[in-house]
Amino acid sequence: MRFWRSVARAYRAWDLCTEPLAAPYGEEPASTIRAAELRWQAWLHGTCKQIGAERPLTIDNYAGKTAIKATEPFSDIISFHPYYIWNDPGADKKQFEAFPDDCVAHGAAKGQGAPGERNSLGCSR
Image (cartoon, helix red, strand yellow):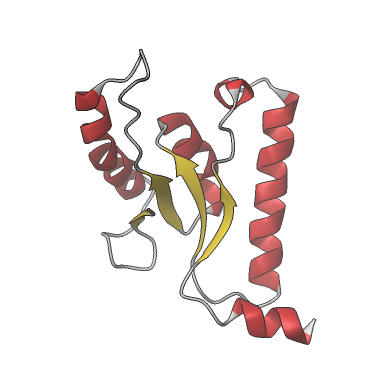
């Protein structure tokens, strides 16, 4: 356990999971797979805090409002991959460009601070 405690204190932020819910079940609130994945993420967040993670914990989502809203309760930083998939028939560039502002508004509604504060918006590359 000492090893994990030292590791938990070593980084600026921890990405606990990359692009969860990035499957059709991610958009289905009644999905048992979705529910299990969210339970696991909540458990992982709590366990990391319990062993001494002092840095912010995040779940790095695909650029989708459903995933952001579902994982925000156990993510200290709202984080997503800002990929515009230009060859996707359903891609909407204006919606994509508005997405970061939507995330900031969601974070503000949940009491998360401005970018740069402990609870803020993060963008990974």
